[in-house]
Length: 357
Ligand code: ADE
Ligand code: ZN
Image (tube, rainbow, N blue to C red; front, side, top):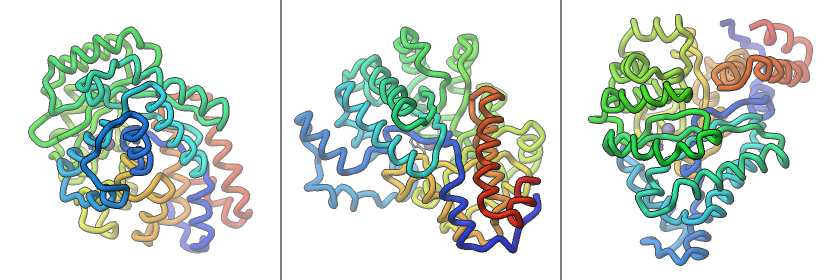
């Protein structure tokens, strides 16, 4: 990919903010802002172990994935009714519209809710109604991906799948999230085999904190079509070659990686290395309410910290987000055209080489 060094920096950030894009790695429970947590706690009569919004926000000082997950699962405890799930997802969709997201594939964690006695139908109905409303009111297309919590058992995952099947038409695929270390993909090989038989699309978190081996196992043992995070692939050059050759997308989440100490600083992030290796990398927000920013903030902070990234990378990342999404080729082509039209508005000198990348 060639780098446009002469593209003015200010215009680069304008391009990042205004280009159409897809978000493929966002946990809807991770979009629950402290303000909404407190509002829902009050509405539902739930007592929180924090004095107020600022005290809760102050607790968001994470040292690793587990330290985040403990607080994240507790925050989701205020979600009880269909309307709560609808309100949470609509708040995300309004942020998404502001970031020029035209398509979002949302993860949800049913076991976090069913374990508290909230029926899976309540979760799926609320989220589905929000997806429908987002299309009608904001012009954003979206889909739901059901994630299994990997710290729980295979039997619990099978049981969750069974509970979800009456709502089969409301989700397009399944994923695997939660505590990665010590919970390898092989633990869920049989669940994912069943999901593939059911025609579900397959993604999995791998290589966030866990080793590169977990990425290979997510591909070979689960049938993952996309790898969530995957940044540890660089530890295995043969794996990097395979990811590039088979064009397996990585849904990378830069701010998440910094907040969970996967990298010490954004300047140390391997985003540019992954792009230069020819991987189909995408930028995503993961759990934006907890990690300090939604999708455009991820783009902006990444490009600020990595000056070797320029306009051609920005456009490549937007293209990758469409290519890696689970939509039809016709829809992908329409978004590619829309992206080209946005790039063209930045002036013919910049637009010509950009559209050729
Ligand atoms: N659940 C929500 N965010 C997650 C992450 N970054 N890794 C694993 N599981 C998650
Ligand atoms: Zn994630």
